[in-house]
Length: 266
Image (tube, rainbow, N blue to C red; front, side, top):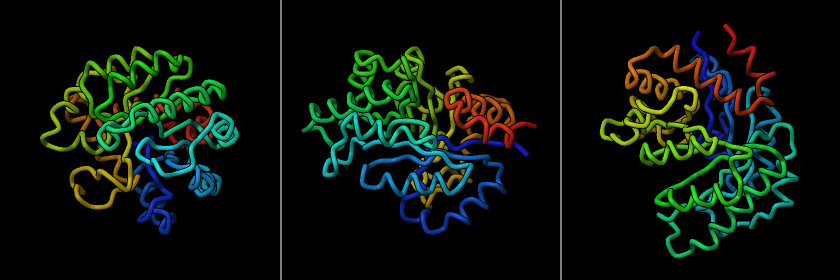
């Protein structure tokens, strides 16, 4: 069976956290070898880490999402403490979101820099969220030396030029269920054009369910439909997309290779 890895989901969120055995069963039935569940606040980090430690095929990240303004503010020390956990593959979700916080760009930018500094200290990759802020996101990644650790530009919806700039900085481009939406032409262009060895797939579950589940709660099992949409756009097989994106994930996160590698090997 074709094996995929969901590079970005939120298993601690409502709709998934209370049905994890069912979610994992569906993953296995659909050829999903594993996933990374993403931290968005410090307050919820213990739950994220508990889920990762409970299941060998689940890994985690720790960070504070740029949309979360009224939560504990991270500093480098706490991110390094949490990020030292062997089940933590990455620092983030971090980045810039000028859609929801147009009035607070300076605060966002400083928080973003703190995450990058922690990632560099730990020598772990970053998980980046950017919305209506690509110019500043790329500039800060360059200024803070984020290319030393690389990472993921997740749920990518920006232009091909931004994708190429991110790749030049050592980042992978992760596409979500949006790539299956008929009118997502900019995302389609990215899916067709970027090198296959820089591509990842994700669900961002419980959000952004791909066709044919669009509008319904999402879950990691549905990442197969993301990969199928990419295969159709690139006019290659699902197996090629699965092999490349799984290999890319394990290249970026070698700490996951010992567990997930045998699940993916033919």
